[in-house]
Image 1 (cartoon, rainbow, N blue to C red):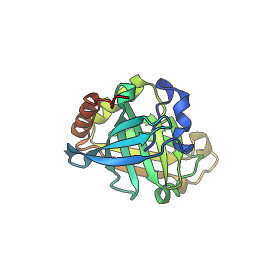
Image 2 (cartoon, one colour; image 1 turned 30 degrees about the vertical axis):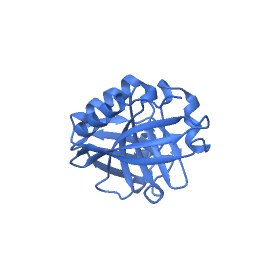
Image 3 (tube, rainbow, N blue to C red; image 1 turned 90 degrees about the horizontal axis):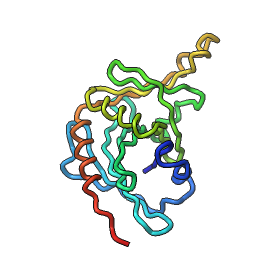
Length: 197
């Protein structure tokens, strides 16, 4: 589990996953959140003050690359605002160069993808570095679309210098079922009752 709230929660959280702050993580499947290729889970982390941080996640796996998943997460502590990210296993991430530019294509809509990158021993996570409003706009676009593709390619200015197109990597995800699964997960987040201290 990785948390990337950046612009709308605060920079303080950006270092959490890589500093051992999260002592425990659990992926608990959520019933009534499975729609077509999407499903929900509850991730929980114990913080140093022993409080529990809950993250409700709607996710699916890539049709084209093993070990790649896309997710929309909702955190009760942060008003259940959507947080978009793509996670790659260590093996799937091995083909990606850090110097490559990231592009997100949702059906026919192409957009740049400013990312916060979180590395761990077993995975690489790209979280959308955007404020609440832009995260919500992306979520609404996903709701009415059928396919998502994330691509890594040499920056445009490098293509003029003969950059090798074989450096490009693209991973595709189905969005079928994403709207229903996301709505179900978001509803669970909003209904979440925190454990009293």
